[in-house]
Image (cartoon, rainbow, N blue to C red):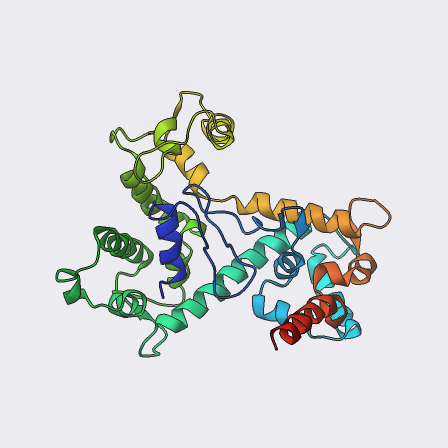
Length: 327
């Protein structure tokens, strides 16, 4: 099974135009749209439905801990959340304001990346020495070794995937020892979240899309699929992409995307995602509408922040009914 990062590369650089980008734990980034990594909050509100699991993970910084809270009695969840809320209150004034929540959520995002990366590292670490070699990655992800690459019967697309992986592996290997340890592997598995990886992300995107090799992306190159075909100009999709190109990415209005603008498209803004989440948490829990949360307000709305057996009951009941139906 391809690693999470490889799946992302497939989607980002054109082997598939859309599809699942699923981390091994639920609630992480699930799709890549038109070439760009999507932010962690992409599925927070989808089709008018609210994904409460995202809130819990954004507060707790761990898929595993969020699942643990789902199985806690409400009073225990409230007790633990009270301790967390005191830590969110960085200046100790008894309230958690938006900047404090933003800082907390950003730190949670980093923790989620670390957790996801360590799980993937463990899967690829064949000899369990806490590091991943290029050979281990090849074996786990592609079922081949270095010597097999020249003799492989795989398609040119899969060979390109291997080459892209090799470039990302090299960029992540900061000490150049040929392995990725626990401090380096997250950049390999989540290159969009590490600035020192962005040059490789940019280069690989341009290699795939910059057809005239001028170092810029025109709208036609931006909107085209991997075969160079653009959507029909009369479709809503075409109009939406044109609007995004013009108003979201083409900052200088020259009808081309330079490196800075391409990266603006490719790389999600975690700060914006954290700000949106902080606003959501405040809007959902600020009973007296003073634009900040007291410790009491946070605890009183524990189902929004962390969940518990009470708030997970409906989901587990639905699962139980589905299991009974299957029987």
